[in-house]
Length: 414
Image (cartoon, rainbow, N blue to C red):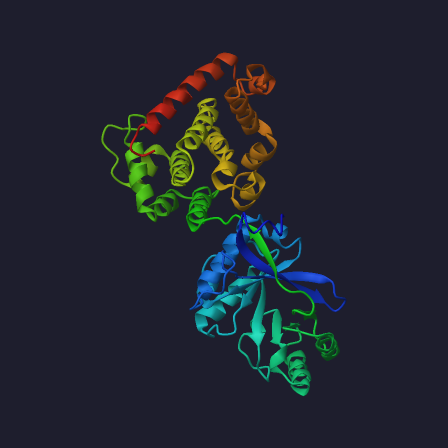
């Protein structure tokens, strides 16, 4: 990761403060909200927005393994953000529960769910003088706010926590001097954080807009491997504009049946789950209005060619369409393709085709790319022959794909 970029060319994404163990080795980082313009904190402070912004901006830098250099990352969560979906897996994320989070039945139930799902939980800014806090049995780490305690109080509360909740790891935060660090070591803390050890470092980069994240989430839901007909329709219905555009599209001459299709459930049933998923994904990408129309056309052309090459195999043809379309994701989202593929629940054959051009789908993608570049002699003819595809088939498929692009780009839907 290009951690500290030129702030004059990029925005502030977040601050990253190291967390150390007793040997002064970095074992984790905490990601802290910072305004993108580098200015003062906004007032009033919105904790929900801060959490969402930090996660969103971490997302722009790649996966959490990249952001944290292979170490754990602590991120603050409010009660509201705890209740929502967490867009990262449990491998590196430490869910840090803010001190003002209410201890409701819903929150406790959610913490239990997250622990069962494998997430590490930390309780932030602990200032209690006993071991009765209701979250203590549910978390893995407690962050002791060192300045709040006198010397005797620190030893007392750590003793209580060790006695009543021996599973806990204790992190002393806001340490300012060597003497404070030595005292916390002597008192039995496991981890340490503070300006004395390391100040937060500002990480710059190019943020992803909320609209981009929403679209990527929609694409992710549409392309779940075992998604049902009802799930596809319900997902599309949550974006009314997308639903309207999709209905317009399926009522063009390319898809029109004897009568007009008037509902999303009818469209999915008549046209098929796979085809609707492909069309909805295409339309979702077209909602990125800061991207040129020509990019959408290129992506559509490549996807259509990949599909037209395999019309005799419906399942393979729709996977081929997604491979062709997703091979342009990097250009749509301004992020490496491998990072995007890592967070999408795609079939293994699609991943292999996108990243290594392997398998039948990889051969189709390679063919489409070579044809776009005019490299007829570089097309993998041997691999195509194994799929029963001849040069005349490629030419015919290309003509059909161009016709499809022309039809779709002049329709109201696209």
